[in-house]
Amino acid sequence: MARTLAAGNWKMNGDAGLMDELATLAAHQGEDGPDVLICPPATMLAQAVAATKDSRVAVGGQDCHAAASGAHTGDVSAAMIRDTGASAVIVGHSERRADHHESNADIRAKAQAAWAAGLLPILCIGESEAERMGPDTLDIIAAQLDASVPDGATGETLVIAYEPIWAIGTGRVPTLEQIVETHDMIRARLVARFGDEGDKIRILYGGSVKPTNAAEIFTAKNVDGALVGGASLKASDFQPIIDALA
Ligand code: PEP
Image (cartoon, rainbow, N blue to C red):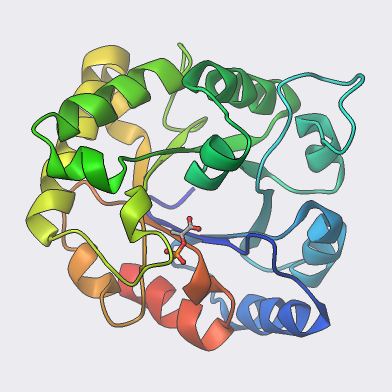
């Protein structure tokens, strides 16, 4: 496992053209470098695993149900994602929290389901614009972190993605100072709870990361990579972000 991670979230985008982009990306990775992960829609997981075979690009889901099986029409379990050959899953993305009313407790249960299936959860937290403007921003993010992350997390079994909701897909990015302050707070909280392991848990920044701003964001000590939406859809956009981490 490399210390740094470039993770791409394709959201509800995916077609043959995107599979070609993924094959290009996979072919481009050398032996060393940051970990690279692409999270396509669930229907494309097996295809994405095949397209990245024998490369350093890993594949992950975008969500999983907390239950192992049962009457949950339209959902997929963590084990189903694992069965495709994927190795990770995003949980708690703000679009899931908003569109599907997922609570911190739901997300904690999903992270535990991911562990039970042998998947690495990429657990998302982040504040709304109103929360960023208010006086309690860091307390709000801290409360979300505490309530979403299950006990027993380690550097090998958890990745946190700090994604300010107002920065996702908007082209707006917090100042470097805000990113540093927030990531430092998250790190301190993880260390207070998990000791040395808290220091090893990777903390990604997400929200309008582009080839033009990645290098500056990655100068922050506690930024261990990025969760990237729009700019993960083209190998020519995503590769410079990966390179900025190397
Ligand atoms: C995301 O979907 O998690 C994300 C950060 O999107 P974008 O990079 O497009 O802001």
